[in-house]
Amino acid sequence: MPPARFDPLAQEIYALKKQLNAVILAHNYQVGEIQDVADYVGDSLGLAQQAAKTSADVIVFCGVHFMAETAKILNPNKIVVLPDKDAGCSLEESCPADKLAALQATNLNFWTIAYINCSAAVKALCDVIVTSGNAEKIVNAAPKDKDLLFVPDENLGQWVMEQTGRPMTLWQGNCYAHVEFRRDALLQMRTQFPLAKVVVHPEALREVRELADAVCSTEKMITYCQTDPAKQFVIVTESGIIHRMQKECPGKEFLCAPTFDVMKLPSDNCRCSECKYMKLNTLEKVRDCMMHLAPRVELPEAILKRARLPIERMLEISARPLANVG
Ligand code: 13P
Ligand code: SF4
Image (cartoon, rainbow, N blue to C red; front, side, top):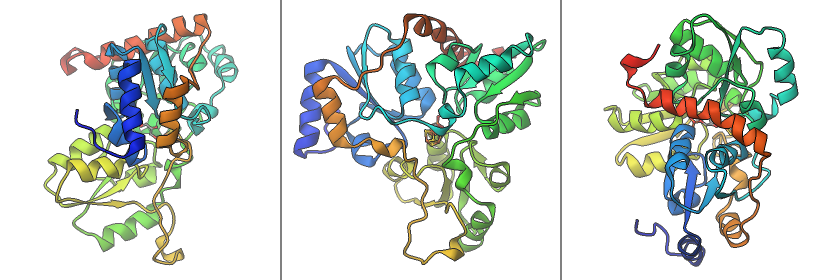
């Protein structure tokens, strides 16, 4: 892959990558300059699939902590580093393992489905993991005689229930960034840009999802914008994704959905949504974590072993042809 950037910092990163036999995986919400030095940029599912098949000795995970943990669970013998150890997630925080275990104890017939946005300790308590890219397929494949418990995103859970018709008990967690999108502000965008297609991440509130032309994971959003004939799109997710959209959909225009009532702000204020955790990572921190091989993801042996089962189940169901699901 030819280097996307020629500045000295990017050059240092490319040299370290060669020296360490490292792979750089980056989420779609990372700043553009990190995306440009990465070997792979994608959604949580794509990143887990890449981590599962890499032959690199070191995985540099540019995303948030639970994503790097997933890479470590799939590669217990490899070194996994992340640029900033404080890059957390409000969904992960909302669901401590001890509280989940207490809820599970109230119904021994629960089949626990966890959105990948949770800690390794929570994954170790679950039957299967989902991402926004495969949640519908995996819930459709869940055993019919079980009571489904979905953690920790109530909005994604609600959307999956609508798609599959399977009732589920929902954990009351949410993504602090996606619940900021407002229906009234989006309606104003629709009036202002009547030809634009509205693309929404399923972590958004139902009243916002109802206004969407498409509800999907970040990777599917990119495919949708590439293939749909529209020339303008309103993007209802974290603004980092616009970088890839602009690169991969030439001639199209992408508008960030406003996170609050547009009328209340002076017109030169930015209203894009940013995840404060994703944005902790910088190109300097990517270089530093490769130079020092720290911060490193380390997990207790028992968690590594147990959390691997539901992740592998997810990868296996994800790879099945649709006809074999359910
Ligand atoms: P995707 O898997 O759709 O990229 O979502 C990850 C995420 O954290 C959304 O907020
Ligand atoms: Fe977590 Fe929301 Fe940030 Fe995604 S955007 S990492 S769900 S806080």
